[in-house]
Amino acid sequence: MTNEGFISMFRRGIKINVIGDSIAAGAGASDSVKSDEEIITTEKRTYCRRYGEKSWYGLFEKYIKDKFPFDNLTYSAIF
Image 1 (cartoon, rainbow, N blue to C red):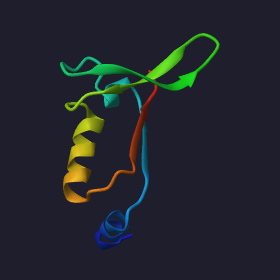
Image 2: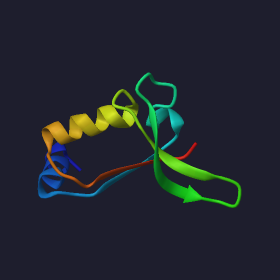
Image 3: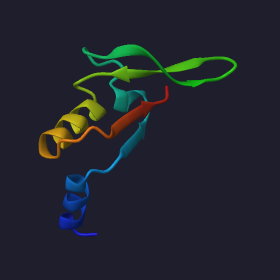
C-alpha cells in the first residue's frame, strides 16, 4: 500500500488497536500512571491500563490525533 492509501484510510476513520508491553505503555517514565481500567483478569492477577504522555503509545497517539483527528485509537499494554 502507498502512503496515499494509508492517509486515505486515516481520513475516512479507522480503528487502531495497539497491543504493547510495559515499555510501550511508559512504565518507569516520570509521567506513567496506572489506571483502574481493567484489561485482563486471570486467576492470579488483574492487568490494568497504564497511561503516560511520554510513553511510546502516548507520543504515537499525539502524532496520529494531531494529523488525523479521530477517536478510534485504543491501547492495551500487558505487563
